[in-house]
Figure 1 (cartoon, one colour):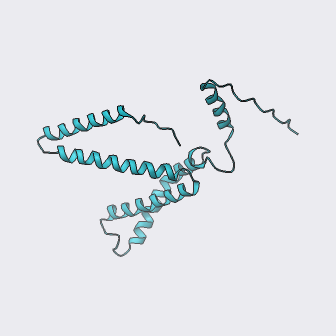
Figure 2: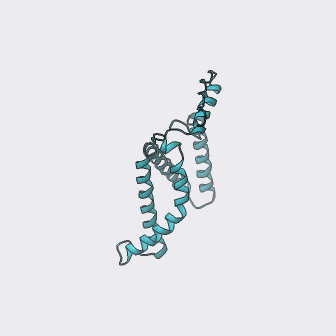
Figure 3: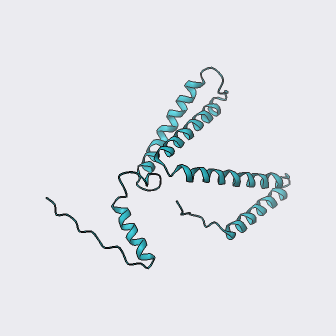
Length: 161
């Protein structure tokens, strides 16, 4: 993938440490003794996000792995929603029906977005046999221009027959 919205480097580390210190100080100053739990939560969240980022960067290289990951997330979300909405454990009678109903509701809301994302000819489907579309050819020309290289010569279009 190679591109990132956030610049990873020393500036990010300094900013995160400063924000953590501010949050810990606020947790202490509020009088509830929440400074240590705040730091633990920040460290745990950082580790979890790094793990999720590593998994996603590997999964998004394949359409099939992306689809499998979406189904896994749907299953986990349905199980969690079924447990939280009914306050019953997943081992209680009728769990399959509750999980199925929650899964359908979640899928109905997520399907349009997932369909658009997976249907794009970028990211997860880069290796799709259809190849890059017209937009990507122009994007490559633009990238070459920004890099100071002359654009590749244009191909002649075939006359409509």
